[in-house]
Length: 307
Image 1: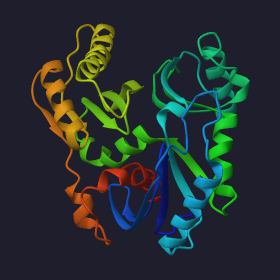
Image 2: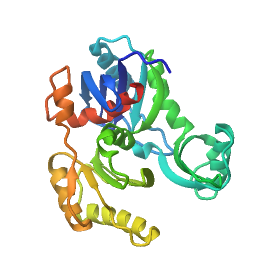
Image 3: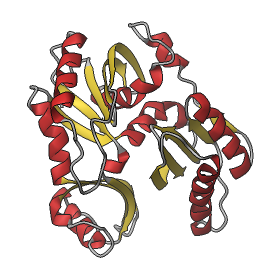
C-alpha cells in the first residue's frame, strides 16, 4: 500500500455520513478536516440479507457534496459500515491455513451448517489472531453479503472514490482507542455507538470474545443490563469463572451515564470511560465537542491508512 501522509475515512450510518481527513500515525492520528451530514430520515437500513441503501440518490448527493467541501484530491478511502450490515465472529480452525484462498474455503466449510445465508453469496474475510504450535488458529471472521458490500462500494465508485478497506463501525471505534488500551494484556472494551452495544474481551493480548447487538436509539436500561451481563456470563462460563478486568467503555450523552450505572452492577471494580479530549486538542480544524462522537467511526477508519 502507498502511504500519502493523508488518509480519508468515511462512515455511512442510518441517517447520515461522516467524512474525515487524518494525518499523523495510527497511534496518534491528527484530524485535518471533517464534515458531518445528518438527514431528516434514514438513508440506509442495515441488513445481512436485504438491500441496505434505501435512498441511493440522496446518499450519492450527500457524499459528493461532502467530499467537495473537504477540498482534497485523496480518492482512496477506508469505510465504516453498520455492524448489522454483516456479521463478525470468532472461530477456532483446527487445520493449518496454508494460504488465504484455502483459509477462506476452510472457514466457509466450518460455518456452512450454522450460518443463515448461502456462503457462496457472501464476501468473507478473516484475520488470524493467534496460531498454536499444532497449527490450529484462532481467527476473526467478517461476513457481508456480496449484494450488500457491492451497494456500499458502488456508491463510492460512482463518485470516483476508491474504497479499499471496509470494516464494521464498532471495530473502527475500538481501532481508534486501541493504542491507549494495548498496555493491558487482559482487557474488556464495551461501547454504545449509534444504538449498538459492542462487547470485546481480550486475554493475553488476543481477542477472545466479540459480540455486537443492535438495540435502538432509545435504550431500555433493563435490556442494556441483560445484554451486558449475559455477554460477560457467557464468556465467564467458557473460561471457568473468569471475571472481567481492566474494563473500559465509551458512550456519549445520557447513554454514558446509563452504561456507567450498568457496569457498576455487572462488573467488579471500577470501569473507565475513554476520554476523547486528545482528539480535540490535536485537531487542525476546530471541533464542536457535541459533534465529535459523530466523527469517531470515520476517524477510526481513516487510521487504517496511516503508518
